[in-house]
Length: 340
Image (cartoon, rainbow, N blue to C red; front, top):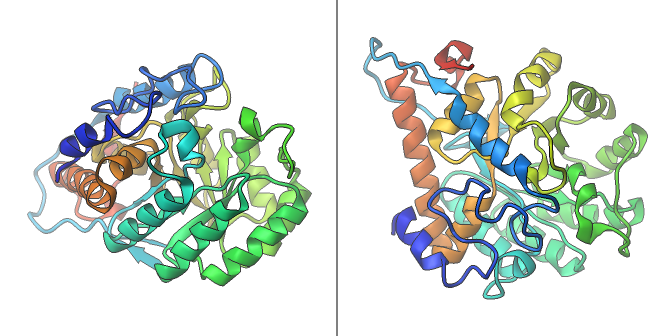
């Protein structure tokens, strides 16, 4: 199975909101929530996608003809590629009821681990979602990153116990999920966090902690102050606030602000090809996160679908590196791309 076949298989299975587009650009579903779109008009998701496409690649084939090495290390774990599957929750609500969160995370975590990368898992109001996700990560020898919603501290403590038992090599919190409408006025409550609150959560985690949802230098420095090991430059895929800048537009300034801190920087939002991965690394990211297309991969082909998508992105990255005269990720620098 290739990814094009996976897309075709997904369309009758993925529900009425997502269109399983040939390339997920945010346009067909831009204002649909429930669904993969936004609580507003959806212009941020579209901008995420478009801004990566405005960056151009500087081709250079006058270089030594040697094998390309795409391997990537994060927190002592080595991966085949510098990209991860992003966390997705409430798949029955947003994507179709042929899978629930438990089945989705089970497929995604195991397939990613088998194919050389790792998956972030989602969280939900149903406690069984985190229970099943952490079991899947434990079965994959800790090769997964559970992502906790910004609940109250008592709920977070309960979830951290599950995470500790899973042996996960890192843990994340999508602080930008505070803007999701279906998390408002819920029990347990969820919402934004102060630096002090975030510091307490990070201390509870007992593992390298990734703060997802950073879109400004100010927020990046707050995450640093709280003790984050990594951040994800992210606007929650454009779902939580219209009129935001694209992640590609803010990445460079955040990279400069954290220079020398030792904090790893990942980025998501509209990254849809191995060439986009290359661009993100050239702008200073250590790695990237891709979410929505992995949903299509799981719905369209389960383990084979995930494998086909990983191979697609990985092959595109290898080809771009080769055509730009670089043979390792460390050689991908700012002069490999052109911005306008």
